[in-house]
Amino acid sequence: MCGITGYTGINQAGPILLEGLRRLEYRGYDSAGIAIQSEKSAETENGSAPASSIKMLKATGKVSHLVEKFEAEPDFKGVCGIGHTRWATHGIPSDTNAHPHLSADGKFAVVHNGIIENFAEIRAELQKYGIEFKSETDTEVIVQLLAYNYKGNFKKALMKTIARLTGSYAIGVISDEYPGTIFAAKQASPLIIGVGIGENYFASDITALVSNTKNVIDLDDGEVAEITPDEVKVFDHTGKEIDKEIRHINWDIASAEKSGYEHFMMKEIMEQPQALKATIEPRIKCETLNCGDTDLSIVFDEIKGLDMKKFNRVHITACGSAYHAGCVGRSIIESLCKIQVEAEVASELRYRDPVMDDKTLVIVISQSGETADTIAAMKECKYKGATVLAIVNVVGSSIAKLADHCIYTWAGPEIAVATTKGYTTQVAVLAMFAVWAAGELKTISHGAYTSLILDIMHLPERAQRALDLNTKVKKMADKYYDNQSLFFIGRNMDYAVALEGSLKLKEISYLHSEAYAAGELKHGTIALIEPGRLVVALCCYEKLFEKTVSNIQQVKARGAEVLAVAHEGNRSIFQEADDVLLVPQTDALLVPVIEIIPLQLFAYYVAKKNGCDIDKPKNLAKSVTVE
Ligand code: G6P
Image (cartoon, rainbow, N blue to C red; front, top):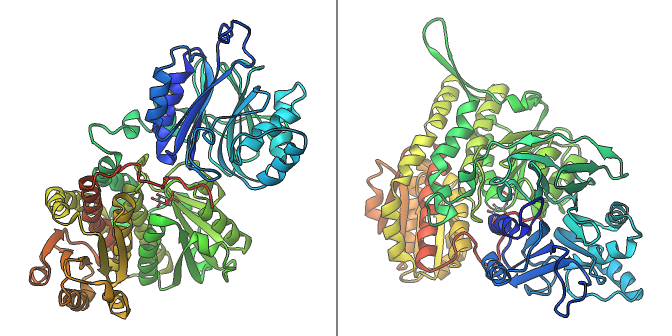
């Protein structure tokens, strides 16, 4: 939610900042802006010295609008600057509310990601001193307070300023009095520093920097960084300089590029076999026994200290698609480990005063590792004594650091707002975790344990075969794209997939879509079924196939058209549905990883046919760092 970046070095900052913002745009795209310490030769129109050497450019809308403005300003030059792409929280998307924000004296500029909760109080206080505010944003208080606190020492003024802020922030600040210096600070919002040679950077995440450097420093909460072209100094909250490790990132530039695909979403859908392989393979151990047989096991080096016998219940929490992965995880863990499991969205859990104690294992799931509600929920659970295991994609993210144990999904960077490989790798990790935990708890037979591992090992190849449905799914999308209201139905695992399939469709195509437990439809929602409505019926969970068929018949009797997803080999479904997509067979507990793939493709092609901006759906952002 909002992306920030900064550069200081020997090259022109403008193009570097704009490129960084382009890569961060998935975090928000209401407006964008950059501020640069202009070269000292720059003068005002009448030839007098400029009042401030900080120059700004802002544009409402996407980063491309800002690029157009920049290209029309050949004099917008400087080697140190900051940039921002916005997802509006305080104030409408407009040039005035776009970041960077400048102090009233023009000496400081700031970009900010997060929310300053006590902004109204600080603003009122500063207004009493006659300071005028230009925007409606919470961010502007940071820069006005900084200028107010400034008595000749930039770092001191910044430390005093952030000590006053409550809420969340990742900020980058420049001043006209400190050429080549950027200060950055963070509290509960992501910020990393990119270390180069003779040039340094900061950004909300690595995607903005990976084309320039793979060496990063993770700034932790409460820390402040002073970044110059040749040096990065980091200070703790008392102002004492501290040593920070440089971490080497192994993402390559291709991971942050579309590599020939029209959209990141399609690229990421297609990357799923590879992402699943990267997530699964390192955790499967295959030993040849003396008798010549092979023995398969799941090994999680990262959770060696986790004693499953300690827990009498599991609570899963997350947001959005990660929550849907959690719903799948609930069924798998409960079924294999014979332990009570609940799944709940983090925004509810955090305020519900849930009953939990040191015998509770809380599993938090997050692709970004930065989702504000998920972080708050996990803190609440930790406070109540629970042990927290995180399943996260972004290495070194807040959730990964805050958790007691962390398992990474190795999906690689996910850029499209609508998650695809993030979701399937989360489900794969949950399945592996459930099998591992059942092994620890001895609630699974050796045969079932081995057979499930074999099925997990086949997931990448089965995902690849599900992707072969691409052309067929496109035809389905061409047929159904103008349905204004759709329903996804399923039972058990199929219901969990229905939730995710429906979300995928609505978030990128803006069509009204709802997911229902197939048996629940008749308790009200069936009133909305009328001739021509599309019902997507998920039929891979074979134990309940006949039951779902009854529900298909109920909606068909009311004129609905039915598109069914079923396993290869299921012939009877052809008598029930208008259209059928057959996916490779897999164990019932692993169905979601495969079954979601045609639904991701369906959402993609429906959105494309409707002319939607697939990678940047309206009103959304990928990393939701606000409540
Ligand atoms: C946003 C994204 C979703 C994602 C959810 C949780 O809403 O658009 O795709 O599932 O946040 O994000 P997380 O990073 O915690 O998985």
